[in-house]
Amino acid sequence: MARKPKKKGGARYKRVVLSLPKRLYYVLNGIAMGDERKLNRLIKGILEDKLMESTVAELELYLGRGEEEEEEEREAQEQA
Image 1 (cartoon, rainbow, N blue to C red):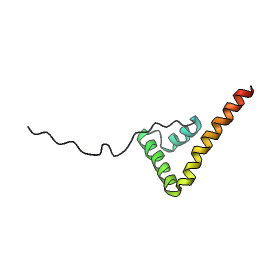
Image 2 (image 1 turned 90 degrees about the vertical axis):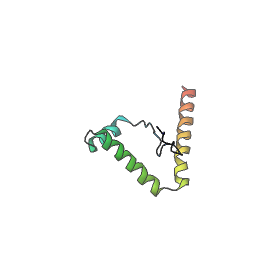
Image 3 (image 1 turned 135 degrees about the horizontal axis):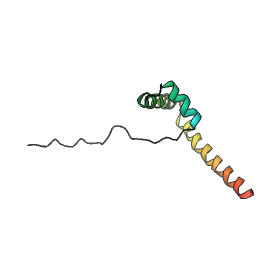
Image 4 (image 1 turned 180 degrees about the horizontal axis):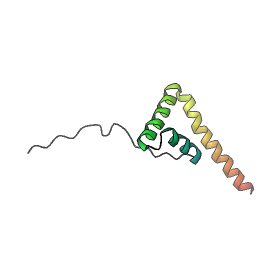
């Protein structure tokens, strides 16, 4: 029995784990009517739309905001 050759390039999509605030999760889950597949499709659609509208420079600003927030938290802890 001949075996099928492996496909090159691996999976088409990468799995990502996303942490959301509970409030946002419940809103999105309500829109998806409690269906996990619909929820995933909704989140994927939102991200794709945002990425299509954004430039690389705008997206890099998100990284800067995260670093600034971390620095502010460190400063607040040091002052306490």
